[in-house]
Length: 116
Length: 114
Image (tube, rainbow over all chains, first blue to last red; front, side, top):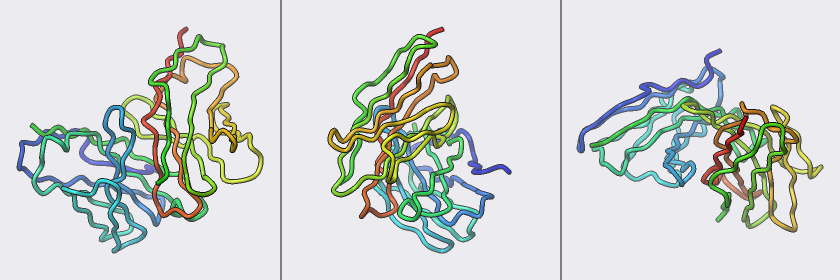
């Protein structure tokens, strides 16, 4: 049981380049989330999904897009990377939403992205 | 809007001593409260949660937390710290009317000194 798997683990981009971060979970969870973690700021929600084919904006969605074409996968895209997007990105999933049974989040190990 | 404050950046404690990590919260209604732990180069792991009922909640790895409504606090505690408890600890809250969003604190680095 792999849990939540994120690829890649590290990436360096130049300003203006694009990339996609992949998140896969094998727990049959309905809910999936993308967070960014910055020093001294905790975790901030970028986008989330309450089920296959649905997505919603979180706290800091600008500059990012997401897709949930399959239940087990949640993709985060950066169309034109900026230095302000240098961060550690975490994907998480949960059985129910945080509004349903308060299911705990299961996190991947993160992707460290540097934009120069 | 819901929010969490973790007032200390770093907590240093000697191995075997009690460990406390502080958290205060602000919500518009009744809170749902969580603690997560992050080890180096890993994602966050769930420790415990308070939803309702007994104010003292027990979780993984010997940790517990006490909900105090009058002080709007949810401090994490462990009676006897281990070196392996050295990690980053996050408190999180959502309110009863909330959507699918947790508000995370900025995190507390715990260093257990052998």
